[in-house]
Length: 181
Image (tube, rainbow, N blue to C red; front, top):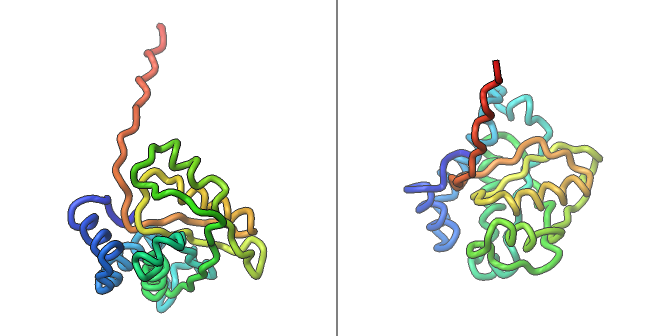
Protein backbone atom coordinates (compact mmCIF):
# COMPACT_ATOMS: atom_id res chain seq x y z
CA UNK A 1 0.00 0.00 0.00
CA UNK A 2 1.16 3.50 -0.74
CA UNK A 3 -0.42 4.81 2.47
CA UNK A 4 -2.82 4.06 5.29
CA UNK A 5 -6.48 4.69 4.52
CA UNK A 6 -7.00 7.54 6.94
CA UNK A 7 -6.94 11.33 7.14
CA UNK A 8 -6.17 13.23 3.96
CA UNK A 9 -5.53 10.06 1.93
CA UNK A 10 -8.99 8.71 2.81
CA UNK A 11 -10.56 12.08 2.01
CA UNK A 12 -8.76 12.25 -1.36
CA UNK A 13 -9.77 8.71 -2.36
CA UNK A 14 -13.42 9.32 -1.46
CA UNK A 15 -13.51 12.73 -3.16
CA UNK A 16 -12.00 11.25 -6.32
CA UNK A 17 -14.04 8.05 -6.34
CA UNK A 18 -17.45 9.17 -5.10
CA UNK A 19 -17.53 12.82 -6.15
CA UNK A 20 -15.70 12.67 -9.48
CA UNK A 21 -12.82 15.05 -8.71
CA UNK A 22 -10.66 13.67 -11.49
CA UNK A 23 -7.74 16.02 -10.78
CA UNK A 24 -6.98 13.77 -7.80
CA UNK A 25 -6.16 10.88 -10.16
CA UNK A 26 -2.60 12.16 -10.57
CA UNK A 27 -1.58 12.37 -6.89
CA UNK A 28 -3.43 9.13 -6.14
CA UNK A 29 -1.75 7.51 -9.16
CA UNK A 30 1.57 8.66 -7.70
CA UNK A 31 0.79 6.80 -4.45
CA UNK A 32 -0.11 3.69 -6.43
CA UNK A 33 3.10 3.96 -8.49
CA UNK A 34 5.10 4.27 -5.26
CA UNK A 35 3.46 1.09 -3.93
CA UNK A 36 4.21 -0.73 -7.19
CA UNK A 37 7.89 0.14 -7.20
CA UNK A 38 8.61 0.09 -3.45
CA UNK A 39 11.82 -1.75 -2.75
CA UNK A 40 12.52 -2.62 -6.39
CA UNK A 41 14.72 0.20 -7.65
CA UNK A 42 14.06 1.81 -11.00
CA UNK A 43 15.50 1.52 -14.47
CA UNK A 44 16.57 4.60 -16.41
CA UNK A 45 13.55 5.62 -18.52
CA UNK A 46 11.53 2.46 -17.85
CA UNK A 47 10.00 0.21 -15.25
CA UNK A 48 11.94 -1.36 -12.42
CA UNK A 49 13.71 -4.45 -13.83
CA UNK A 50 11.62 -6.74 -11.61
CA UNK A 51 8.44 -5.34 -13.22
CA UNK A 52 9.56 -5.31 -16.86
CA UNK A 53 6.92 -6.89 -19.07
CA UNK A 54 4.30 -6.99 -16.32
CA UNK A 55 0.82 -5.61 -16.95
CA UNK A 56 -1.07 -3.49 -14.45
CA UNK A 57 -4.47 -5.14 -14.04
CA UNK A 58 -6.98 -3.05 -12.08
CA UNK A 59 -9.84 -4.55 -10.12
CA UNK A 60 -12.84 -3.40 -12.15
CA UNK A 61 -15.69 -1.37 -10.77
CA UNK A 62 -19.04 -3.13 -10.91
CA UNK A 63 -21.36 -2.06 -13.72
CA UNK A 64 -23.66 -0.26 -11.29
CA UNK A 65 -20.76 1.61 -9.64
CA UNK A 66 -19.41 2.63 -13.04
CA UNK A 67 -22.85 3.91 -14.05
CA UNK A 68 -23.28 5.82 -10.79
CA UNK A 69 -19.77 7.32 -10.80
CA UNK A 70 -19.52 7.83 -14.54
CA UNK A 71 -16.11 6.14 -14.65
CA UNK A 72 -14.13 3.05 -13.72
CA UNK A 73 -12.00 4.80 -11.13
CA UNK A 74 -9.46 1.98 -10.65
CA UNK A 75 -8.77 1.74 -14.39
CA UNK A 76 -8.07 5.49 -14.54
CA UNK A 77 -5.73 5.21 -11.54
CA UNK A 78 -3.95 2.19 -13.04
CA UNK A 79 -3.39 4.14 -16.27
CA UNK A 80 -1.90 7.06 -14.31
CA UNK A 81 0.40 4.75 -12.35
CA UNK A 82 1.38 2.94 -15.58
CA UNK A 83 2.35 6.23 -17.21
CA UNK A 84 4.53 7.05 -14.18
CA UNK A 85 6.26 3.66 -14.12
CA UNK A 86 6.62 2.84 -17.82
CA UNK A 87 4.22 -0.10 -17.58
CA UNK A 88 1.10 -0.99 -19.56
CA UNK A 89 -2.41 -1.63 -18.29
CA UNK A 90 -4.84 -4.37 -19.22
CA UNK A 91 -8.52 -4.34 -18.29
CA UNK A 92 -8.39 -8.13 -18.10
CA UNK A 93 -10.85 -8.68 -15.24
CA UNK A 94 -14.63 -8.57 -15.30
CA UNK A 95 -17.44 -9.31 -12.90
CA UNK A 96 -19.42 -12.39 -13.97
CA UNK A 97 -22.37 -11.79 -11.67
CA UNK A 98 -23.78 -8.99 -9.53
CA UNK A 99 -22.33 -8.54 -6.04
CA UNK A 100 -23.54 -6.53 -3.07
CA UNK A 101 -21.87 -3.32 -1.97
CA UNK A 102 -19.18 -4.51 0.43
CA UNK A 103 -19.10 -1.52 2.80
CA UNK A 104 -21.59 -2.87 5.36
CA UNK A 105 -20.56 -6.54 5.15
CA UNK A 106 -18.50 -8.51 7.66
CA UNK A 107 -15.18 -10.04 6.66
CA UNK A 108 -16.76 -13.46 6.08
CA UNK A 109 -19.71 -12.01 4.16
CA UNK A 110 -17.37 -9.98 1.96
CA UNK A 111 -15.54 -13.17 1.01
CA UNK A 112 -18.80 -15.02 0.33
CA UNK A 113 -20.17 -12.06 -1.64
CA UNK A 114 -17.32 -12.01 -4.16
CA UNK A 115 -16.35 -15.71 -4.21
CA UNK A 116 -16.28 -16.90 -7.83
CA UNK A 117 -17.65 -13.56 -9.07
CA UNK A 118 -14.77 -12.60 -11.41
CA UNK A 119 -13.22 -13.96 -14.55
CA UNK A 120 -10.21 -12.81 -16.53
CA UNK A 121 -9.40 -12.71 -20.21
CA UNK A 122 -6.41 -15.05 -20.79
CA UNK A 123 -3.03 -13.44 -21.40
CA UNK A 124 -1.46 -13.63 -24.84
CA UNK A 125 1.33 -15.72 -23.28
CA UNK A 126 0.57 -18.17 -20.46
CA UNK A 127 2.33 -17.21 -17.26
CA UNK A 128 2.51 -13.52 -18.17
CA UNK A 129 3.28 -11.40 -15.11
CA UNK A 130 0.46 -9.27 -13.75
CA UNK A 131 0.43 -6.52 -11.14
CA UNK A 132 -3.00 -6.49 -9.52
CA UNK A 133 -4.02 -2.98 -8.42
CA UNK A 134 -6.95 -1.33 -6.66
CA UNK A 135 -7.65 1.84 -4.74
CA UNK A 136 -8.24 0.57 -1.17
CA UNK A 137 -7.76 -2.74 0.59
CA UNK A 138 -10.15 -3.24 3.47
CA UNK A 139 -10.25 -6.99 4.13
CA UNK A 140 -8.57 -8.27 0.97
CA UNK A 141 -11.63 -10.26 -0.17
CA UNK A 142 -11.97 -8.53 -3.55
CA UNK A 143 -8.22 -8.65 -4.21
CA UNK A 144 -8.17 -12.36 -3.34
CA UNK A 145 -11.01 -13.01 -5.79
CA UNK A 146 -9.28 -10.96 -8.51
CA UNK A 147 -6.01 -12.85 -7.88
CA UNK A 148 -7.86 -16.16 -8.18
CA UNK A 149 -9.48 -15.14 -11.48
CA UNK A 150 -6.14 -13.99 -12.95
CA UNK A 151 -4.41 -17.21 -11.90
CA UNK A 152 -7.18 -19.36 -13.40
CA UNK A 153 -6.86 -17.42 -16.68
CA UNK A 154 -3.11 -18.08 -16.82
CA UNK A 155 -1.49 -14.96 -15.36
CA UNK A 156 1.29 -15.04 -12.80
CA UNK A 157 0.43 -12.36 -10.25
CA UNK A 158 3.74 -10.92 -9.06
CA UNK A 159 2.45 -8.09 -6.91
CA UNK A 160 -0.78 -6.81 -5.40
CA UNK A 161 -0.74 -3.07 -4.73
CA UNK A 162 -3.23 -0.49 -3.53
CA UNK A 163 -3.21 3.24 -2.95
CA UNK A 164 -4.16 2.74 0.68
CA UNK A 165 -4.96 -0.01 3.16
CA UNK A 166 -7.30 0.02 6.12
CA UNK A 167 -5.54 -0.61 9.39
CA UNK A 168 -7.31 -3.63 10.85
CA UNK A 169 -7.26 -4.96 14.36
CA UNK A 170 -6.12 -8.54 14.40
CA UNK A 171 -6.37 -10.79 17.41
CA UNK A 172 -2.85 -11.59 18.45
CA UNK A 173 -1.89 -14.98 19.69
CA UNK A 174 -0.45 -15.16 23.16
CA UNK A 175 3.27 -15.78 23.32
CA UNK A 176 4.19 -19.46 23.79
CA UNK A 177 5.23 -20.38 27.34
CA UNK A 178 8.95 -20.38 28.00
CA UNK A 179 10.66 -23.78 27.77
CA UNK A 180 10.85 -25.76 30.98
CA UNK A 181 14.42 -25.96 32.22
